[in-house]
Amino acid sequence: MKKISFVVFAMLFLNFAVVSVHAEEEEDVLSGQELVDGCSEGYLPGKPNQYCMQYFFGLVQTLAALQEMEPGSKLFCIDPNVIGLEEVTDKVTNWMNNVPDRLNEDAYILATQALHESYPCAPANI
Image 1: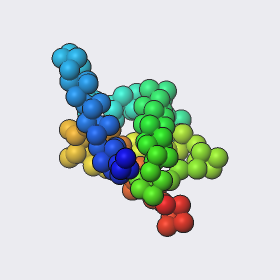
Image 2 (image 1 turned 120 degrees about the vertical axis):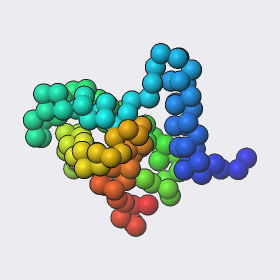
Image 3 (image 1 turned 90 degrees about the horizontal axis):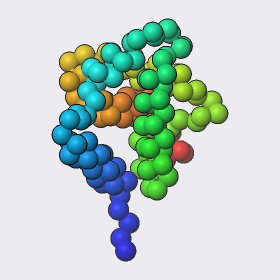
């Protein structure tokens, strides 16, 4: 059996997630604007709200699990012993706030790009 590349697998996984959500008819994929709005409620620097942290925790855990399946194709590198969820949440939220013209896009796409640009992998970590 041929090994499926991480990027192809991730895209298939994310497309399946989008199709599954749309299949429920009433549900829509969360937009970047909706996520930023949810993250801004009760926000204090260094102390993001639980809604926002839970979203990013789930996304990071899902993508990290996919990265483990194909370690040579890492999208981002975060050492949880060094970088806390609060910092990740702040950094990704700030990245999204800096691209207001893209907030109509799906939140998971923007957040994944933000993770990739904010936490690049050193060649030794790929």
